[in-house]
Length: 374
Image (cartoon, rainbow, N blue to C red):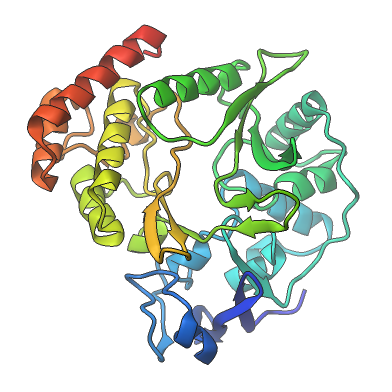
């Protein structure tokens, strides 16, 4: 595989700009002249809509801007990519991120696509969920799988630690998850119950479903919010950026607080309904013990028609812990044992009406107890 030194970046067939390797590690970026006329900033804090060459830092994304790092598979997806490269006699440790973006090409999360692309010749996958779950477990236990090509085709562009596939269900684009080596076999049922509770708490999520299984309680699935189908028309890809990508900070470092996240959300969306949505989600994460609330688990999506940003539907909600058992994102500085006092302090700092804040927090706490999530 030849070293990629230049990539074109596209959005829905339009040229956004060009990435070029600088000093052999940094992926410099420049907007296309036509995009500067009628496009939008794909990363408002780091890449404002200006005619200049933007140079990223080496850290934390190995020479990429965060918005492009968001296109790369993480966790499970990266594992599949590395295994497939090794199978094709390519050393994954010698492959840089621009080459990895060329492998992603047009299959990444969000709307950005990259050329030139690098294709592996892959067979059409077979959609037997129990079989896929068994093969996922094999990949996690060893370097070997009879169906590595099939798994890559289904989930090679996905992020997150748990095995998953990207597939079509009822003519819509879905993500279906499988247990990791640390999960119980019933993790799918647990995440599904969390989604039902979150929706009853007033948290916006895409449609979710527990897909049936003969070997466990079922597999959790959710419709993708970065893909929209309108009747028989083509699939529209939705541009998105994580808080990690926006702030140019690694989600592996627990350096975020909900006070910062609130200010970021208000700055980006200019909409207090989005602040209230984030507050409701924070309350749920606290009361339902979802402590893996790192900066890649908060995403913003762009609506080109209204030229506005908003929070994406919530995702990855389940019982979890982060480093040291604490919240990855602290609640007014408290990641160990946050409670009502910390929640209200965050609300007060961003200007949410305190009576309303208490009412929301109490409602969420009651709902979580009703579902018996903790």
